[in-house]
Length: 317
Image 1 (tube, one colour):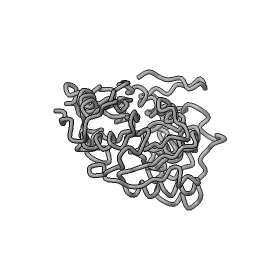
Image 2: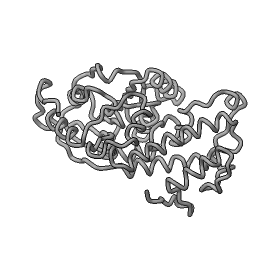
Image 3: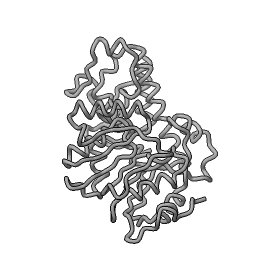
């Protein structure tokens, strides 16, 4: 993996960076980390109660990518991702993998737009809605729970649908994608970022380890299965882009941000253990991506002029 330059003269290549990070967290030295590391103007401050309580892994992920962001990519990244939508206040958008709602709130704030945010984990959805209320975004970016295996949406309701990792843990992907298709208005837009599998490379332990880290068992499709399904449902696919390197870059950028904004040395020992566990999770994710067995792809598609009825389309094999 190349060592990206972050503009401060530092590079954070994966092996050396994560090795030094975890050595520092474990009290083994490990040499200096990139960036100032301490006394950053945006540094995270912890109350006495927060220091005494167990550290929530979701808190660590928000240290990586920002409040409400729990998968790789901060607000700037998400706003760049949705540019093809050409968002404007007249549009209605849907996020079908909302997490804590950070992306939805960022989009709503940047474009003065209403965006419905759905999340399969009811606790995440509850916490995300609390964050939307606290930010005054309860109307522009409400977060609610849904079951991706059985949910329904109102027909022709949305101009655009965003899903970041929305389907790779869904068992009946064809049904899920059909629901999205029917919920889009004529010429509506769909933007997905998904993990796909390359079967010839899928026999290694790295993929199995990565799969075990996911909150629900992955049911991975190949790139061709996504293309075939989207076409059969009536989507006009405009972009299929391998974004694996982008995802790895966002992971490393997140950890670079953490070491610049969190005073790691002052963390209680049990908090350091949580941060180490989280770092190991993302090292294993990068290791799986490095094998090529699992890749990240971006799909951008539009509803075709003559989409077939809901019963059309065969489940790809």
